[in-house]
Image (cartoon, rainbow, N blue to C red; front, side, top):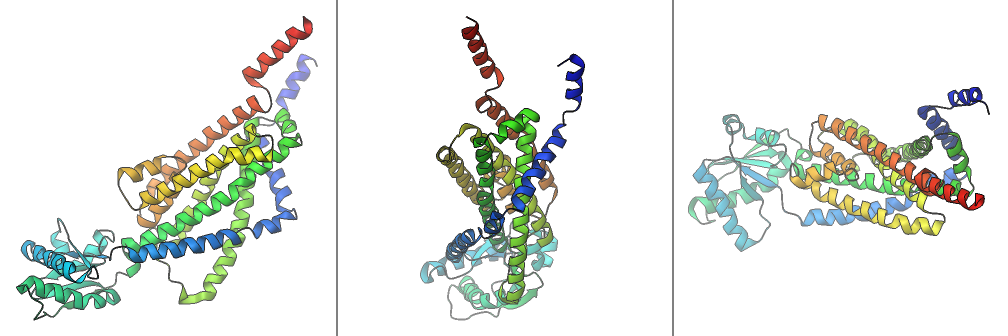
Length: 414
């Protein structure tokens, strides 16, 4: 080939984005219109069963947890007397009484309107107790504070004269704050969103690995790598499988939505802090990021494996590590604003789970933009590292391959 022909061939080479688009379109259409795609859509039946079992276990854990707290905004002496009285009664009667906590640094506006404490303190309290032990006032959602009326009267009597003989009348101030707005309900929403994200990611990310090993075995991957950059092959395969996964999720979501609408009011889901439309949108984006992060690692594993058995052996540590990071993100969800939560947000493989939980608990949206940018940087780095490893190990290129060819040339010529 002449120098001019070489320049023409070089100019005709596809760019990185164009090559990735070609690979993505090829894989996407080949999988979407295959006969096995129907059986792929039936796959979530097993994760649904696991999700139901996990939900039942989570419900038992939730039932065994401490009761929602009542914030006390009385005068300092009266507030301490109520909290001490509750402690004495709990020692004699058990833990059936509602927990009471002092609202620290209550503003004049919060003292004037105790119901605003639940809003200003971001759902830290399920009810607010004001007034005095002789004339207590309980503010909060109607159904909840009605059930607490007798307990608060008993505690107020104990705080007033050290006996439960004469109970004061507890005045109820019902607020419009729904019971879903407290932190415990949002915690359940965050837990459900995290679990669903984890199940979908682990179930669908393995398709990337199986597809790469299959094409590596029949030498298709070598043909693609010879024609276009290896990074484009990796990006194309990742986004093709992501597109197939999103199609499957759309089908499953449509079926699940139909079942939810048919159930009507039988299913009561706590409202997330950012609202359901924003949470669903962020859930789709964070699924894409979690899928790309884990899929890029699986692609790197595919460069090290030659058989299905090797794939299973090499992918098991990654799967277990991802499971541990999911549990870490679940624990960090219960520690909002702590160093543990910040670490879960910074670690790339736990960041999608931690940030989706934060969306259910905190209304701010700007941290999600920063987190998505951080995750995208890691996707780029992992794809580049995985493609370089694939070239070095599978394609026998790079410095190691060049040295091998040099030694082969010395032996042949010698």
